[in-house]
Length: 636
Figure: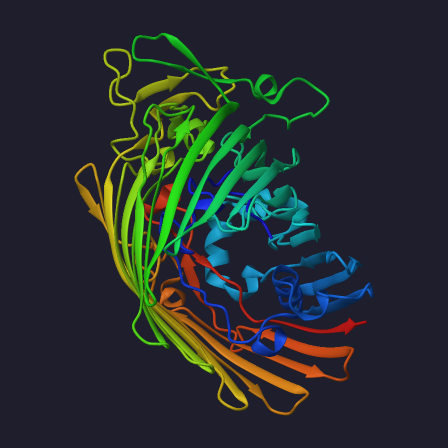
């Protein structure tokens, strides 16, 4: 429910230019495929199934020719005090013109795995390292872990138009996912929220020409109560409680897309995306930001350091970035033969923040070998603009002092994909090998590589600066001045294979992915960045009776590479979870379900954030152990 570490994610290719259903930039991820079938009988949670029906218009949420309200409500509860409630609804306001409305709301609240009990050696090392028995004081040495979230979605559609609104808010402990440098205490709160409002309209100018307009408003804010809690460098028996964080940003975006169906089975798509963004990325505001006071930039104040010549310098803690983005694009599709389709297009992007104006072509060939077998080749070029946080990250880590670098530019990427699909009525199989390269990789300041170090002799030599006594930057002493930069190249290749089927009362699915990665930065070659080379998922839904559906599943991956195991060496080996979902349809309107995650209570770890102590490698972080909920949902 929380995306607290993503102040802003910018994918330069907009929705109108995703030609082939794939992102322009392929990140290294663990592939998660959709299970066969729709709804909870395929092993999905009831809440997720309701969201699927809203998104696709399937199920009882879509009621052509009727004004009857259809709704579903549900609730569950279980291990770690987990509590969920949700509801979704749909209906038709005007049957003649198909004016429909749908909505969805969800509430989640739970504690997370008590790591002091599930991973005692890890926790013992934590409290020893942080002198926790004294620092925790009256709170004891029990980790404070909570997970809270609310989601709301509403949509009205009709007359070739739609308007939809989505709201999300979440709260977790700000130490979650980090190394033991941060504290699992009640004061360590991270709370944020997002709002998205979007309207669309399709205007049919002629039989073969249509214009789609899309307006989007997106807002994100980190609550001023959010903060990190870490050991107080001036008091061995206390926590430092003044590391408050704040972020806020909004974007207005308009996209106009003209679609023209030409003779000879040619389709032309051309359009433009214009957006304006105003972003204050995650920043430190001592004492916490006061919405009724001065601006965040003024309240943030400055960090101070002295260079090698003794000259003082001030770094604003908070920066605000405002910029325009203008991106026209064009694509053409030509059904050359009944079984052969050619696609080509390009995009030009002007962004206020960068001098470079990238032209990013892409092309694809789609050939239906038979009625069941389709082959695709896809070539894409693209670039991803760095989030404002990376260019404007300002902090004092006591060993390094980070300053903004407005010259940070976008990363660029080229990728080749081959996609082979075999599909029958009851079975489908897809194989996707790929190869890609990347350049201008953003090297974040806290990686502390030689490229990050500021070297401006004679005033700053090899990054050496000093925080003077009495400075608001932190304890006085030497620091290495660093900044985020572009540098390095990478190559990646791999393959994904996934399939699903329906054979009588059994509906199996599986996925497997293999990935290899090499990055060269300042002459140093590194491999997979703390992730697994092999990843697999396997499951089957068994329709035991017309009312009972049983879905066991397995998620397994190879040992994550280039991870500092710490005290979790055994837990890091071949992480896996075995899960079980059981759905019983008591009646047409009432369903009962049982969802068990990590059924065998397997204790496993994955790579987390790179801490100072690990020598540049991500530190292994313990994951959730057994969790289960029992719930029901009612349709009417």
